[in-house]
Image (cartoon, rainbow, N blue to C red):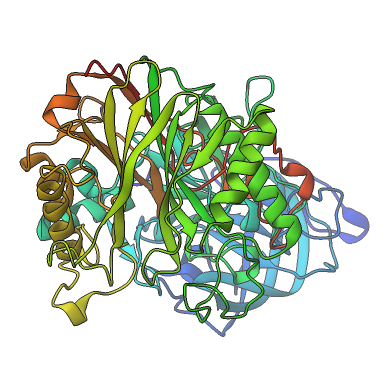
Length: 622
């Protein structure tokens, strides 16, 4: 049931020379003869029943987003009005957006009562009126309508994505009196928008629930009902005024996923945002500047016990070859490149990645998403780390090119702390037919000896098949149970990995094996269960809602760490170092979309990648 809208109006008699007259308070009089209510324009569906028709409506300006006025922080080429005589139908909205273009003939302000003549149109699903005449006929005020999330129903946009059903509030001045949590910052740089949710941050379904078709469907509806987009109220892409990046209540604030805001208010619109280039969504365009509370502050250096520290780090397609648009990468030189597009971007990426790797304090670093070349990608990182250390402290395992994928796994180590024992080994289909190396990158294993004691540990770096592309040709379809594409491919690889490490493949003579990397499977999915069921100890199992990656506004753990039974007793701690996932992508090395280069800080580790590293502390006793 809609909460009644509160309206007070001061109506001025229209007369030559501006006129004047007595004022009155609600109830307001019905609209003049020939006018229609805004509710009649909006109708009960997603498309106006008066689409394409000429109408005359009257309403109070509740949101001033005109171009060409003194306020340059809210430019949507129009303004929102709300009916002074709302109908009694709770299914219809009493607000609408008036689109008056880049050079409006009249400047309106919040509180003006206006009469608008114009044509009704639908623009990317939003009902609008394109005016032929606007007259200011009085002034008044209106209180925002309080909306509590989650709402009861969901709808699908034209892209098939589920959204909260907020059609009955389109164009109205509304408030969300509860606390909303930031769930997504991916589009902050390009479109100025932030994903928000009631009830805390959103997690992937299979991060905390067993895969299930019905459960997954129900879950998607549940998170849609509690979600909304906070828009910046600007139509342009790549705004120079990043309205929310520093909009916090604490000094030195930088916005992060997990931070909160209470009492948002503004106009509700259905739009793709930024001139129709974003995603179709219900967007709140605020009439006041929000201030976020830092509930998820940036972490400092990782705090984990143990004399030996091992890290697992997806380095976001670190390629020493520039992506010039040519197919000149990969072992055969015929595949598309990834990563930096220019020398400047590569310099930025190298600097930021080096900072993160160095500040992790890791003595052994298992890396994924390295360019699969002979040595250049690893050499670039090691040279930069040694320059940072001021000594030849770091080295790498020289694997050369590994199979046919454009990316590979790699290992960097601190030579003063450990030394390699024996040659590296790979797990591929030649070792176990269950490991499909056409899809999964081969697992890389290397034994190390602790310099101080000679105690040994073997580190296995993994990067299993992603969820993004289909494996239907292999009889491994997406079952719509929350696990995405290629789940069987990953599960078989995990089972092969479990059996492989039990054979001491590095020949170290020691049962201590640490299995790390990007498994591309969330915490409760089949591949992770296969590792647990194979007798390996999940080193993140004691953490509530672990996460290392964010996709579609939902957090989850794609990066994992497991130990064999003998090693598990020597593990002193394991943490996800949340330096990347919670940060807006606009802080990374890229310079695309006219990004302000001054936003980049090579001296901090934040947003060095799109995955969070895992840091494990060990006290090796044997």
